[in-house]
Amino acid sequence: MLRQSKGQFNPQQLYFGSHQPQHVEYASYTGPLTVKLIAGQGCGLVLTAAARKGQLLAVCKPLAVGESKHAGMVFDHSTGCMNDMSQADLITQLISLCSSNSTTQQRVYALYDHADNACRHEEDATFLQGVSTGNMTPQRLSVDSAKVARLVKYNAFGEGKSHNATPMDPLVMAKHETSARHCMCALYPLLSMANHSCCPNSQYMLINDVAFVRAGKDLKKGEEVTISYQGNQLQAHVQERQKATQNWGFHCKCARCQAEMSIPSGVNKALQTIRANLSSSPCAPGSVLASFRAANKSSSTRDYAKVVQQVQLLLNELDAALAETVLSDQQKGWMCFTVLSAYECCRTCYEHLQDFQALHQVWQTILRLHKSTSPASDYHVREAVTAVYSLHATCGGTHQHLVRNAIKQAEAVMALRYGPMSDAQMQQAVQQVADRATDLQQRQ
Image (tube, rainbow, N blue to C red; front, side, top):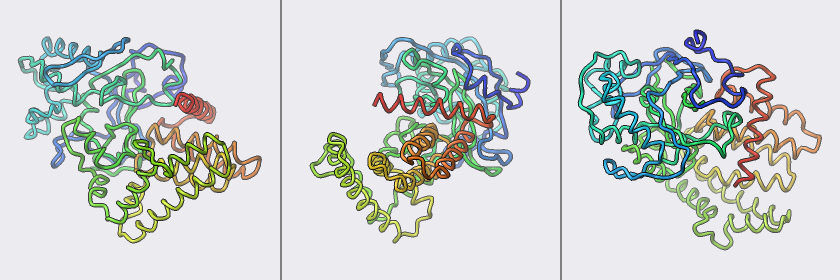
């Protein structure tokens, strides 16, 4: 525990141990972080020192955990929302804790609840720092159950059915039977201070009921640490993402959203055309999706080649429109990430066509888009590992150097998300993620 309190955790225990109960004792850890007021956003997490990519920034233990092994929803009259059973359990627990401990009341009440943003004590940054550590002066507060319910709605993280559910990590999943997993919802005062971004610079994951936060890229001292509240939905169109963030009572104003809200008309038209061709509601005759479904049904190389030709024409139009703008390479990457499914469509076709060179090129594009938008996300990890096996199956014994490069690339992405590992542990991790990715594809 002493080593863990200094941010040193054993990968074997975290990722490769046998099935463990939900409540495992990990030490809390807070790296170079402080809570500060962010203009227009209330409070946020800010670095007190530079952080390298993959660095562990925090290990957050929950203030309370709600659990349920049963499916079902409960209507909350105070918020007007349907909560899963684990959320309802968490609300009950927090009301009990707040009733018996005034310091816990303050830690919970200091979080954002949309209805009373003044609870963040914007005039007192010292108080905000105390929220994350629990070092506050006891003060008797009456318990407002409706307020607690709102706080859970806007701040809880978990594996339930609600809008704040966290996707199961592909490596951590290997330690659990997913069919037997129950819903879990927890409140983390420090993690709740991290603001959302549609191009987050950090990632978090849940191991049992403990949250681990790592830097997804090199970060400077004084830079704000951001995470995504939307899981793997970051490839959605900006309007869809804006609608989703209303669940947390705000409109996202991150750099990516601002860039996409003022998108040049030519780029917007090209993106809309691609989305329409890949939309299943409705799936128009002659669209890319219709052709792709026909190719999957016939398994004809000619049909797959036709799909590739259709997609490439659309992507060429997008590239031409982007070339006429003054957008940065990163901003162009954000635009392309919203039509990631087009590149993934090409990837599948190239696999069927056994076109290794084209497959390698499109995989590089896919991984570059992930890196520019949400580096080290669980989605990024799965794609990087899937690329290895996809290329290996297609290379036919040639181009082994490119397959080895893909392996190194996947290991680099995994090191960002999971921290340093031995060679043997990394090989085991890659295999476990590959197994989970295969299982996911079969279920879909």
